[in-house]
Length: 124
Image (cartoon, rainbow, N blue to C red):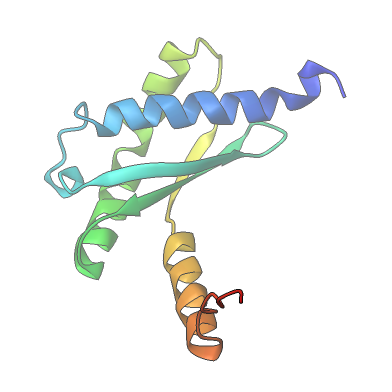
């Protein structure tokens, strides 16, 4: 496939980078003052929608407030992305809490309960 076929992936990487920079201090909403990290950005092949996955440190209430704050700031973020990335139209942004690390930790804990770690055996 040509580079043109991977444009949505390149744009996703650039959105990831730019949103990370914005979260580091450009956004002034008090709901966004909790520790947040962008883990992944998925852009549809037609470049009309982007789903931004974030990890938010804090209580479930702080997490839902942070997602609401990001949704509220979505218009500003989208405008800034179109200027910084020099694209005519930036994708519509949807922010979603990334729970994959919690799920992976839960699976790891369950596997450890089922099968205890193997102890090394001594060679005679």
